Length: 271
Ligand SMILES: C[S@@+](CC[C@H](N)C(=O)[O-])C[C@H]1O[C@@H](n2cnc3c(N)ncnc32)[C@H](O)[C@@H]1O
Image (cartoon, rainbow, N blue to C red; front, side):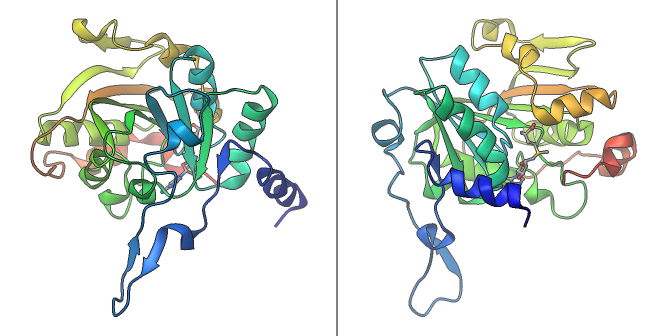
């Protein structure tokens, strides 16, 4: 491991806004069981009391990397609390350093896998999720995509009734896949665009006042800037995950077609 990364990991230990639980904190092996089980972390249900200066609706950015949306939205919305989640400590270091340096009272970061979130958040504790340039998981199981029906089932365990999920991505594949999940579950699309800086957004009129749509155009993440330099259109989708009964998988997604359409993004490595 490089010296720079080690230095960041060491600094991470001193950031009050960064929670870095160990796997043992959230995974247990019960007597006689082969499978590991998730157990609740002490922060679950207590973020507003233990981490933030004042209680407020909580917004998550999942796969936040350097936490660009978390930091920018927190500055734009002091009336809300923001938590960036990622598995990579060296990337989280950037956001945690900025939040600490600027003494932002409504920012926190959580180093964990998105798969473990229900160990950290209680029912109704979260009011919105941003998925920013998530890995599209072009091959392999669709369940690994952060907008799959499996992940919606996990999010449901801690989202409030009127929650909104935002997906901003350069991957038309992931955008269309998510639209297919939305159709299969008859979810409500609130806003969408397949080339936001070109053709803009279509917004349901009743949602125009609903949230900070300007942020979609005015905040660009680290990866977004790279993809824009590659000339890739940026897509956006906001939807309500409200749904009765179990979520079902995408049914009409033409995987081969959208894989073909993925273009230069297909060979781009996130590492
Ligand atoms: C393409 S990067 C995007 C980072 C940032 N949102 C941006 O736009 O600059 C995807 C991020 O998702 C994180 N990630 C991928 N799968 C994850 C998982 N299962 N749990 C937590 N983080 C994950 C990666 O570590 C990486 O930082």
